[in-house]
Image 1: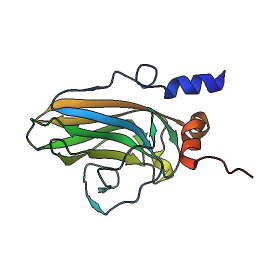
Image 2: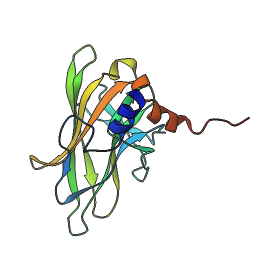
Image 3: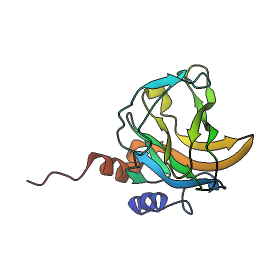
Image 4: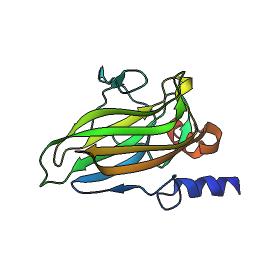
Amino acid sequence: MRLAAILMMLAGPALAGSGLSFAAPPVMLIERGVICQVTPDGARPAPETEQGIINLIEPGRRVDVATEVVPAALGISFGIRFTLSETAAPMALRVIVTHPPMGSRGIEVESWTTGASPGAPSLSLFTFEYAYEMVEGDWTMALEAGGERLLEQHFTVVPADAARPVLAACDGPAAVS
């Protein structure tokens, strides 16, 4: 019964998440989910985040597990791949991540800017790099331009054991002897 409930949570937006996710033109959601392991291509300042910096990740990197259910496990990244419609002009977007209180200051909202171009994928992620970041509950990743919310994706961070299928996908197939 528990496995069936977990698989239902992993099934998709109609069955999981804390709210209604959406994307509005000119933003188009390509995929959302978990990336098992990322290798940063550098970092840049992001003063409106807990750490004050964000890692830079190859924007063409695809998600490993399409899901809204995220295991609270060190090294796990989750987020969205998106693009702009072909007729849109390149634009700056504000990425806004809301989550339960984290860190010594109880931060609940973090944000940074990212660029987006028509037809080119962009990637916005949150990576659990420190134990204090792995707060369970409802998380939202949103994109805004000019004060208008153009994309909102909901995730639910759960204890690692409650998302075994995601972790199993990250670990790869079991060795056969």
